[in-house]
Image (cartoon, rainbow, N blue to C red):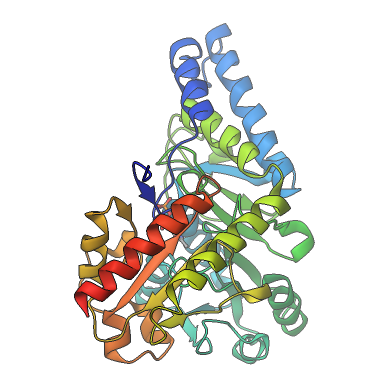
Length: 384
Ligand SMILES: Cc1ncc(COP(=O)(O)O)c(C=O)c1O
């Protein structure tokens, strides 16, 4: 019996865990009070929020006052970058990031350039890895913020963020280091406190939690300008009545995702290898974009090019087999033109056009991968 469907677009978003849906429904039914209200209904909702904050803090090995709830990865990234840069402008006007960041990083930096900041965009190597020596060379005494993603959402390159943190801080101990961990939280362990990270973004819908919910870790003592002003929620850093069901759902999804993490990493890496082992010998001309495996590769993202074919046609042909993949970043799907990430890898035009992204979650099985690989081989033969 073929599987009903094979969902391999988990870097775009993940199916919500059933336990999370149940927990959120319970909060909506029973803890409907406003956490700021002084009566019992309010304090009940407030308690749930604080328990959820504690859960996220414990999973990151930080303190609960260092967690700010937001509406997702985009807001966490905007808040960290705009907030740190604008607040610390008197100390310097130079910022550093990379050319392969998500648009929710690149666009805030472009906005800051319009406000008079200077930004250095680091070019990674041809596998999408940032050289710590180049990052250090970009930093000077005017640098106030460096932002580098942990796992790239299109090609799965995994940056050595701890090594990067110590290298850049050795050069300028006063700068702040932000990490977009949207694609890694819940999949790979990262403890920002130990790693020398000052701010870190996560997004619930990437780890089987609800859409429109995220968090920013901000190291104690760092001052930022808020993006939203209003009722003083989240210690005045993010105004707006709290999304209690979303917060509770995110914390539960985080706890479930971070369980048995090493076992899940091994499973994801073996599913990724299984896919490649079934497809590459049949199509030896394919190209793997980004690192293939090992310490430099995220275990759940595989980006491959079939030069001469069109990624979008492969995607739609696979859809006929109920196999769902992506051509790159779903968040950019309304933007035309080649992916800025594949461009930064210096891929030729044909390889960029023929690229597809397969992204896994803990819910995928070996049977699903075998079915999807057979479908992919069939589709490639038909399109070639
Ligand atoms: C690396 C990365 N950062 C940020 C985001 C934005 O997160 P959200 O969809 O929660 O706004 C995404 C979404 O795909 C992402 O992949």
